[in-house]
Image (tube, rainbow, N blue to C red; front, side, top):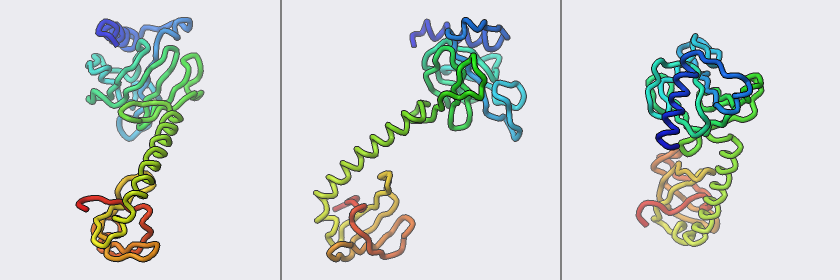
Length: 218
């Protein structure tokens, strides 16, 4: 977003969101409507309500005075911060849409429809909030790529993984490391591992080598 467009967007946020200006339905498509649905305290809040809802204190890094639990912005990518935090919700706001900020997600509905008619849910992914289905597809694609790379690496490294004294790590289904140890012995299809970190730390286990990989010094 250019500096000029950002300035216009911020001006729109202050005047339309904070000054009580109403927008006629035929103009809804020209703006994005942002509501805080995060409770400020132990009591639940009705999204956008001044009572019990955390106020939006920052928009695109700029302090909003006065702060408000609801703002109207020009469409585009915006970063919304609740309270004293300048960040927290970065997403593409489309015209005619209502965005309810909740903990860990954003519910999207059309401005001319009831808030309960959610058409999309945005979730955090790579530093931004994107559609949940897109996040799932992208995550699945990445995991498939990791699985392919891991399998290829296993084929190449298997003789060394089975070697006595090899330093190995265990990979979870999401290919995160959860255990570490050293190979003490092997059979035709298993390796004996002295585990020194993770859930089995301090134990010696026999396991298939399929989910173990070389790590550390080998």
